[in-house]
Length: 352
Ligand SMILES: O=C(O)CCC(=O)C(=O)O
Ligand SMILES: [Fe+2]
Image 1 (cartoon, rainbow, N blue to C red):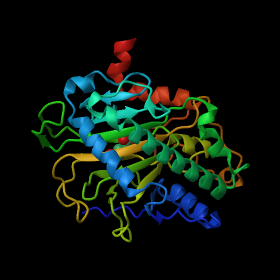
Image 2: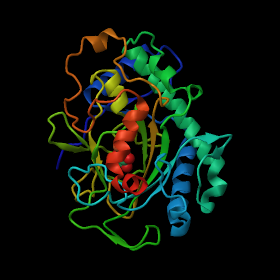
Image 3: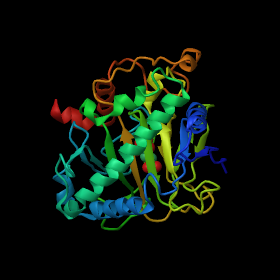
């Protein structure tokens, strides 16, 4: 059995001096590109997470016609059907074995996109959950700025303020059917073949991602520094068993990696069908659900290297360990368009 990833667990819910926490966060982001944020219930209450997963289940169980009416657009909002997105086009012959629903911004609690009538009553609650994620993402950006001693330390936070204008930020709900899915939830009854992968290998396109998972549902793996070993990431790492909710898994995306010239790692990861001998206490039965908050800066944010002695002293460069993010773009929006075009070949072909 592959050893599980040794990702640190950090508590950011304290009120005191955050310098030490900021340093720990930065070290985890450099070493692993992933960190668990202990869920004490303070930043994101367990009930809010539960409510979001309940909404997701209703949404995916909605009649297919309701979901089709919300089909994902080039603005990256809406429903992506089974196999529609391909996260690793160079290595996958079929699209990801999952369906997903992306929510963009809400204004006064209202989504700015079509949503299935089945979950219309959940709109305000979903908007509130997105706000909780936004606030936590700002806190983490602030800590990263402090920990890296960026000048000024508020640099990352300032680039993510809603007041700066539109951004690619997305709250995404995911449903991964089991290998054989005869339930009414999927687009149709599905049966995975040997070629199927739940989510192909990729790094995330934004600055950082908050990931919520359910106890007992395995599948996420990260690529270790050696570039060939895949390591499972437990939902409930040691020490968090009694917390109100599993920790929030945070990973660095391409943009924070660009900003820091690769010092912060945008680690490649994937979601697989676990093969029996996975993480202890996790079992692959029924569909798997997850919720990802992809935090992006305002669209015009420039991705030049930030003023920080720590970053200046780092000579590693971007290429190390991540062939999925090539630096040939200038702004957050240009980068997002490039990545979406590669993952949604059909959507971009249809619209050309
Ligand atoms: O479902 C998961 O655990 C991870 C999904 C993911 O990596 C993504 O959507 O970018
Ligand atoms: Fe991801």
